[in-house]
Length: 232
Image 1 (spheres, one colour):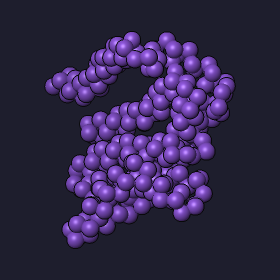
Image 2 (cartoon, rainbow, N blue to C red):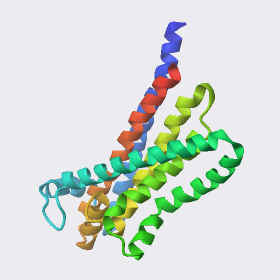
Image 3 (cartoon, one colour):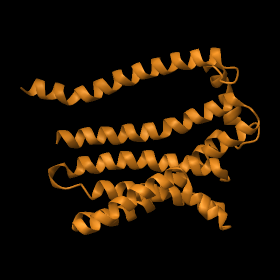
């Protein structure tokens, strides 16, 4: 009995590893095929060869580590702000159905608007300093957590909260990348934008892969925490 329970507990992790490996192989095959057909899409070797330039800071950008650090700092600030407001709004939503009826649709709209960078466009159009790039991801995180926390009740409360946190990472990080692409002063999104202006598509793809990998790592950690909570 104990062996079967332990086996069931490890099954999701094993399946995730196998599924991730299969997805990695399929994506690389598709990438190679597309690079053969396209004149602009670099193949894997070109992308790997671009990383020394990225780390050295050669070209129009600061070093890759500086860009990663800038994005992580902005995201951390946005996560703290978003978590505070998300918890407050989620608690209000869970307190009364009338409040939930008002908060849920507003949160659904705000997280999509923040994901496409709408708040940042409005702020720039009013002449506000571009350093407010933490606002859209904070809005996306707060709205997503408000939706999750408003439904988190009963024995599965912690699991629902983890699922909400995973969704908040996706929406928050995506909105941050959109903001940086719009013209922030630093960060991975801005690095992609600058490299594209110089037609360095190998550097564009290399930087984009790093920008994609970071939320995947955070999501994997949260998913592992969710598995642990689910077993308990």
